[in-house]
Image (cartoon, rainbow, N blue to C red; front, side):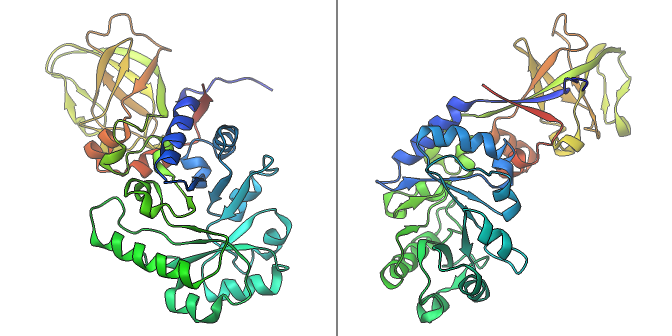
Length: 348
């Protein structure tokens, strides 16, 4: 097999990932701290994320689908995995075969699990204000869960990243559920919910974004470390005369003679057109502003003053998540999960 070096790479900081998990765990008021690793570990690679966090002491992991769960087999010793989307009509074979718990989200899923789950424990999601997945409160307390062995009863905060009265209302509703529905554990808080205080911790927290360097609320700033560092290789360095334009639509005109580094990067890799006007990179400490439009596979950077930059050199993209989100209008979640398969994931 021919060994071909990819022209894009994500440098992933395992120490920062673990440090973020430990800080989040310390905020939970004694609650265990799990990890959401859906969407392939928010784009970093779910198996590697699970490995690093399990080694640090994390024991509870969450994915979205049964395919994501199957890809993580076999699980590390002592680790539990839950599937957030529950058990659909086509999932029952996987649900029986894999050592994984479903998070049941509807009366129909509860009935399906009763019929095909062999009495094994499950998790259950109850909707306290998100109006997304989950049994309605009146269904959950009205007998729909009778006889079901519940490992973890969950709900999900809709507005935890905001100072919203909805947070207190959902907290009160979940406390009432804890008193009404027997389960071994209770779990409400995501990354932002953890930052709302220990009252939201219950028995288990489920951070996602903050593990990977995202700042869900201001309280986390200064504590959460950047984990993902995208880099792209230079394909060509070219001279552009004053008055010449660069890229589609002639969107950038050189105000002077300039040197342009054309990089192997574009919107097919998740580096979208909205980065134009604010994006940039660095090389050996030199700032290289993005110029022109981002195209499918190519992006140009102004390399004036960057010395001997040349073909094959690596540029480090500006990718601080909250800063880049504010500049582009993309959410921090989109910035992480959108980074494409052409990036080689390199842990260090």
